[in-house]
Length: 352
Ligand code: SF4
Image (cartoon, rainbow, N blue to C red; front, side, top):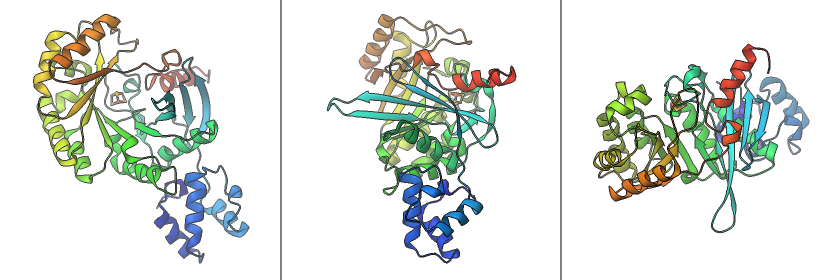
């Protein structure tokens, strides 16, 4: 059993309290301090007896990631580099936007693995390879630490940082239960997005979980040849298999899927690509998020604004709902994996 109390559900803290001879109501108090208040130490739990605080301190020391770096973009996007207990570096991003109602909503992008084994060629994290899965507590802690650093509530969560969340499914689902909990951060389940590179078996399993979250699938190519060039996972699970799982997901969950699509000049956009996508996705309730490719060592070229708009319109003409996603944090290495990749390189050269 884990010793990280930040990954304990209330019922798990309750059985711990029982085993320690403490009254049942302590579980609710401690869960609230940990998950709602995000305390940095047991000493802050003012309504918990000092003897119990000390016991917990000794036997269940709070495991907190260490903030190595915080960068702020000119558009207000913030990026964090954390070091975990074993020295692994992970990153997370906080974006704010004003809704039509005038309210500010904050979206937090967190990591589910240190590094990633999937090797997508446009992604800086892919080049790091997989270091290891993150624990539930390490995922929850990213949210708690950033909410405490910024002294702000987080409204939306996207599992779109480093890693493939569906390869760490049990820990990810538990972190969602904790972060969605009414006595904790209370992040609405419909405001939580899981982003996958497209693992059919896991997509079907997720559908069977019956969660009301948003599933985002990285598509990035209108045919197997193009997609395999960008995403090695397509060699193992080609589009036919992936899209059959996506159909199963939408039919079982009654939720739309979001397809992520990176736009690369002279590779995966244009009228022909739009027509292929129209056929491919026909009958799948979905939205398409178009993302102009970020510059990087891969050498892919970002299409001009007019070309992006033309592709978006061509998709609409092919019967698909597409939007061009607003780009955030480009001046602070906004794309996932860039900061940790740099940190790894700097650590090697002793600069960090
Ligand atoms: S895009 Fe996602 S799945 Fe692909 S290598 Fe990067 S982190 Fe991994």
